[in-house]
Length: 308
Length: 200
Image (cartoon, rainbow over all chains, first blue to last red; front, top):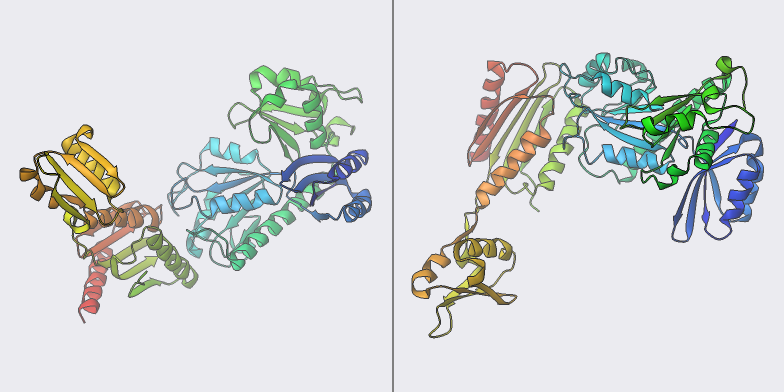
C-alpha cells in the first residue's frame, strides 16, 4: 500500500529525495518550488516510510502525512452568486489544495433554498466523477437538515457538509460527515479560530478518504492510479503540451486525463504496460462530464483476476 | 469608521442569528455602508422561511458640487478659458469625465496635477461650472445598499420579495414561498419600532 505524504524542505539536494522515492517504487505526484523551498507531494510504499523519514532528517526537511494527496475533491456551492463566493468557498477549495488535493469548484444552477433546491442530472454526474464532494451550506440548522433530505439524491461518493451550527453527523441526513462553524461567511478566513475550523475539515476529509482507501485495499485495483499517470506521461507525448492545471489529475481509483476523448481514447486504451497488458484490460477509459476530457477508472482485482 | 447604533437579529436559531449578524456586518463594511445606516433590525424564521430586514437610513451628505472641492476662476486675461484649481484630488476622474462629455476632450487640458483648463467662454460658464454636480452621494449609497441587501444579505433562495425604499428607511420582506400578509405587517411594525427608537 502506498502512503500519501508531503515533503517540505530546501531546494538544495531535494533531488536525492525524489530519486530515493522513485527507487523505492513510490511516485512523485507534484513538485512545487517556492523560492528556496520545495514541496513534494508523493506516494511512498508504507513499509519504506522509515527510510524516507531518515532521508528527510538528513536533508533538514520534514515529512508529514497528507491524506488528501492524489485525490480530486469537488467543492460544491449552491450557486455561483456573491452569497457563496469568493469567500468561504474559495477559502475551502484553496485550503484543501494546500493540503495536496486537487479541488474543483462546482456552482449549481438551482441549488439555493430549502424547499426549492434542485440538482440536475449533469451536475450529479459531474460531482460523481470526484472522490469526495464538499457541500458548503449556510447558517441555519433547520435549513441544512431539510435541504439534506433531498439535495444529495443520486450522489454516490462520500458527502461532506459544512454549515454554521454544530451538528452531529447522524443528524444531517445522507451526509457522510458534517463539519460545523462554517456557515455563510463573507470575509476571508484567516483568524486562528477559522483556520482551526479549516484544519478540522481537512482532517475529516482525510479520515473519509482513509476509509475509502481501506475499502479499496480489500479488493485492490489492478493498476495503481499513479502508474496510469506515469505510463500516459511516457507514451502520450501530447500531454506535455496540455496547458490545463494538472493535465493528469489523480483520483483514488483512477485519473482524469485532460485530452479530448474523441481523438485520444483509443491511443490511451492501447497503452502497453511492461507486464504485457494494455490499459483497456486493467481500466475503463470513459468520456468525462468535464469538458471533453477522458476519465480513467481502474478495475478491481475481482474483475481482472490480476494486479500489475 | 462609526459603528452602527444598533443591529439586532431576531431568530430562534441562536447560532444562525450570530452568523447572520456577522454576515451583515461584513457586508456593510465591504460596501462602506456603516455610516449610512442608523438602526437595523432583522427577523429570520428558518422554519417558516421568512427574512425581514428593516433599517433606518442616514443619507445626510448632499450632492457634491465642483465648488466644494475646487477654485473655479477665469483664465488668463484675453483668453477664452476657465481655470479650475483642485483642492482635493479624489473627484478628479469623475470631474474629467463630466468635462469631456460637456466640452469635448480637445477643449479640456490638464497642465498640472491639480490644474484643469477648459477652453470655453468664461463669462457664461464660470458660474455654471461652480454649480456642476460631480457626485450624487445619496443615489450611490442607495445603489450600494440595494446591492448589499438584495444580492448579498438575504438568503439566496428567498426569491419572493417585497420592498419599501426611501431616503429615510428601507424594508425588505423575503421568502421562499408566497408572502403572507402578517409578515409584511410584521415588517412594517418593526419599521415603526425602529423609527420610534431613533426619535426617542
